[in-house]
Amino acid sequence: MQMTQGWGSWLIDLEVRWQRNRQITAIRQTLRLSFPFVLLGSLAQFVDESWLQTNGYYYQTLHVAKWLFQLRALREYLRLISAGTLGLMAMFMAFGVSFYLVAPSTERTADRLLAGITAVISLKFFNVSRGSVLSLQPVKWVSTNLGLTGILMGLLVGLLVGNTYRWGLARQQRAADSLGAMFGITSSWVLGAALLGLLWISTQTVSPNAAFVGLLRAPLQLPQVLLGLLGVSALTSVYQWLGVLGPLTISGQSMITTQNLAAVLDHRGWQVPHPLTLHTIVNVYAQFGGSGMLLGLLFAIFLTRGACRQQRVAWLSLIPTLGNVGAPLMVGVPVVLSPLLGIPLLLAPLATISVSWLCVRLAWVPAVAYPLATGTPGPLLAYLGTGGSWSALLLALVDLAISTAIYYPFVKWHRLAQLKEGGAHDEA
Image (cartoon, rainbow, N blue to C red; front, side):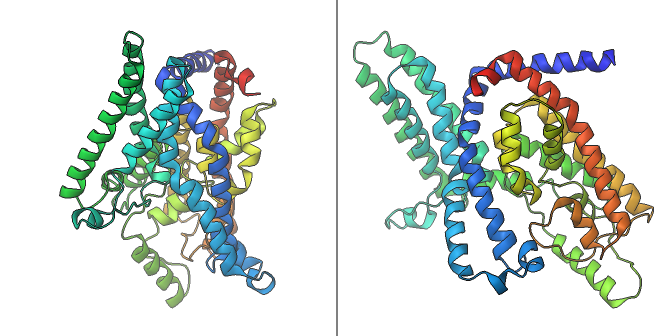
């Protein structure tokens, strides 16, 4: 017990020191500011994919097509909301981080806004249609890499621009021509970013963010052993913690899933050729609420008493988290770049993967073979994917309990860190 309390005290102090860092403070303020938009976009995405699409869980179970009209119009409406919120998160992050970094250095709102706008413009220079620029046609801006997977890139651009403006504002206090100083910083950033953007699209066929996400996918090959599954889960958790919140797809999984389904349909019994895969273990037993077993985090927050911002964020994020959309929790708590919550984000899925792999390996639980509808609640994935196996459902509930138990002490320590840092009183 004393060792646990000692580790808890050390982690709380680490979290407090981390939160008080100027750069991290700006990032956390931006993440919290973005929460309403991420929540709204996630709800729109969840309803669209789970209720209005033919492969959605609620579309199939509630027979939505029989009683809800104008499905196409509703889908168009919800997709527009999702694109206008989640689809522009990288730009939001770039603006917010740059704005909040500059805010303590000046009382002039114009200077703060100028820093944020410059960050957005700099980010956009790397997200243009390559063909339109090189063929001297009207420039077309693209937004495919400005969504949840681009959050980290937006944070980095915001940090670079914001710190440059802070340096310029410090020099401006000693200069007579403040307008000239700010114009010099802004023009230097815009001209430099445009030049770098031109050099990039002249030599590369994808945006920097697409290239970065491609590098992230490189280690995520087809794992067929326990260490491979654990490695994929660990890398995914690290990416999520850094702010790469979009899905990182791995090629080859659809073929393996098809082979498992064909084996079950063509033969008697439940013999699948690939019982230990990313789909049958990680996707089914280690991603309740999204990558990192965020449903366990949600329940841990509910079990931790006391009215605070965490509780409000958890209740607001309940519906998308049950549909395995974890972005609201990642941004609202926030879990992104939190050392204290990053530990269970990594450990919880590793524990559930190990337990689930052992149970499937020893044939205590059948491997998932049936395709799963989008938005299926996490604990029901294994039950439905095995055709109604109660042992699979029991294993899923055990995994959920394990993840909640892992998150619980870290949630308590995180709350103590918030109180010690003083932010909880400001947010109430």
